[in-house]
Image (cartoon, rainbow, N blue to C red; front, side):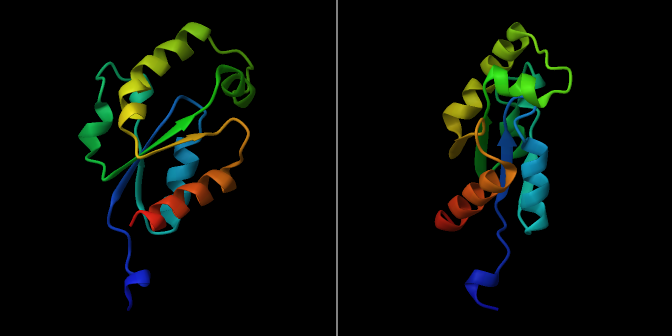
Length: 122
């Protein structure tokens, strides 16, 4: 087995607000053999909860409030809750290896960007 066939052993942790695609991305990455996990940082008062997952790579997903509202079936989401989530995510975004704006891109594009980044920065 050559190096290109070796599994990527880095732990990839994904953060982002509700409805940003954390769960979808981590499922897709795991299906490709990556050790990927979503961190519910947006729900935690621990400002660096993501660190407790010991990431080798930290990926941040961003969406704006309107996109969050469109992705939630109710179509309503409190601006105050969204702002609080952004505060809770700030440290993670500042330390992230890669941050992707997911407002106008689909899951396939996000997955492709992350996988390309991981391969380039292996």
